[in-house]
Length: 318
Image 1 (cartoon, helix red, strand yellow):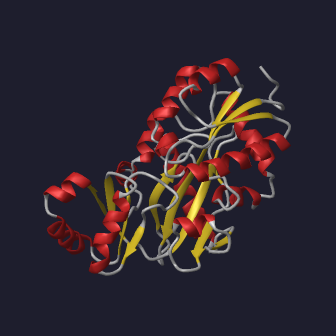
Image 2 (cartoon, rainbow, N blue to C red; image 1 turned 180 degrees about the vertical axis):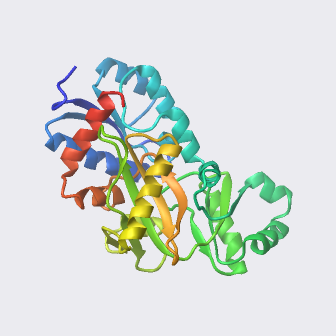
């Protein structure tokens, strides 16, 4: 085994999900940071020979940067557990819970945290009960505006803020493009924030909160990954009291869902200071425009030193 200060690390990047390009960008950025930190890094695009390749290479640590179902639904992470090779990120079962946004929201709600009311609708239910009547019922039950998004997935793909009844049918179609189940959720007016939670060996800790202000008002896929389309404030422009509450909420939800090493918790903070949980990301984006790297840099730590500490903690099995 390598010494902790010079590890042999395999990064998994690519895959076949809708977020393949984002995953490749994340993988390259992590590889650059770890290589700069003195580690030996190999980037692998998972395929039919992945498990054989991992067994043959026997790295010290595997770092998955696979976004979308390829990496975040828990299946691959459960397989990685069977290899006996330490890997960074949550266990398969914990990832599966967080991957399903409706399930994660219900667990968070039962624990006493605020999360917008929502209804999950499969394509079969939507079709069998009659699209027109279902849409009318949703508007009556939840009200406008509302948010429609895939029940699984990330990078804001298939997410629509619906302000008029006429926009709802198209929003449902867009969500179903990315998942068989759509989540129709009450819209919460407030400050959109995200909190990276990391554990480098001393327990989960919240990094500085990132406030998200899209130029056109919607944090879409394009606004996430095209420079200049979103303004970010790190730390977020919240009061000290609100910031402390948001950070504590994020760490508590990370722990509640059984996540480890690194996660990103997305929330909306309303005018009363209440933090509303939206979703948890078990393998958050680590591209040049992603939010976790921004939060790390706001601590005056380098990406290389932070990623090295995360990999070392994964190696110890914590």
